[in-house]
Image (cartoon, rainbow, N blue to C red):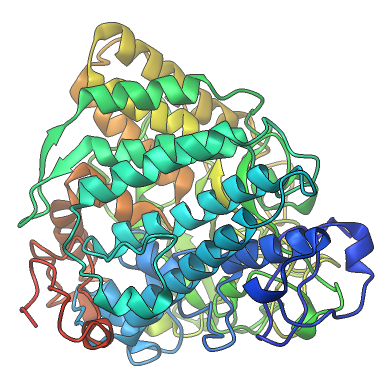
Length: 592
């Protein structure tokens, strides 16, 4: 069993487990609070309570699958990468409204995400206040622990800014009974991001390059997060329209400089290693949420409950889950490549790739059509397609493992799951759950962040270096072990072809298209896609093109339309009520 560093909070009266093996063997010790933290030996218990916020399980909000850390609904279903899935349009209608750009302020899943994020912030602030009172001579690691918690607190603020834009900032020393008096329009998006980035950089100064315990935040992780936040900050937006009005090259230079200061990471040799337990804390892991299984806690362990609803289901499926979070046909089409193995930027003008066709004489017999063209091998690393081998499962190829095929088609996902026959994956409820970690930032992200900054900076040398970085990510996929035909393992399951970008024709416009495509293909289903579109200022264009391309496949897209202002969620009406009418609504939605 791997070391259980980052834990899940139970209830206010439940004990928290320490990061150390000795504490793991201890029985419950009672509740933790600022009042009983005089014993320096208990410091790590309180610190763990802040780390536990990544699990999104609180005593009064036990639904991380509805308000997920992974942002599968907020960042992928809301974008062009994924369908909601499940039983149909009314099954989690709140997510259906995200998918079809019909969000309203009374959507409870917005209020739940807001609430969970501020619970995380509150707990981090309480932890920091308490640690400041501890005698440094008795707890030499005090400053390091405070810095770790600052990074977690900054994570939650960054999430809120990406989701809601107009948010209240609660100072660490602000009493919780004063939260109600804080307005949500005191700071702009850029001011929030500037504060977050600077706090991350300050925290990094108190952190070691590496930590002795797996899962603890180190200096390099804090720097990496600061680079990510500054990348977002560089795309300056008009307050009333969210349109990108300037790309700040000085901030982009800071992004490059910060990433250049980060060393000690590398890409995993095979893309598929990202979803294997033995590699999860390997060289690609920068900032990772640790999960565990069969550790003595309820429901099989501290697993990633954000994925609870998303395991596949259907006839012949080894699991019988709820079947949410399915890859879109548009995403599958985007993996097509040309004769040189490069992406087809015009894929939306071409027929759908890999569509299921049933045999007229046998309703149970089917095959995939339009599969003669080339595809990036990551297609079958990321998505589970009918007739294709599903990881190392030998029972059958991936079949009709979708709960509502009439509504959502036939494809599911392979990312974030172990192979179904694995002894490390639950065979019962929660379906497919495992100890697989969640990567908030991995090394491939840093390569692509730097490439993006270099491309937007625009000089010839910068463009050439960006091409090298993008090609490095593509080369890993190219050298990964391709998925084999289920019945003939000497053959590939598809015509896989992925090439490296040549110097010829590599100008800023082409490089920008290449980077944005690479970001999508490499990071598909990781919860980042919609935020990328907003950062680049292209969400409205991309989403309306997507609805147009997909409306023949998904009937519920017939009247879908993305409007200016919908780049951010509305401020939840429940939070407006909490503020006593102090909050103002985001542009694009009716005023309160």
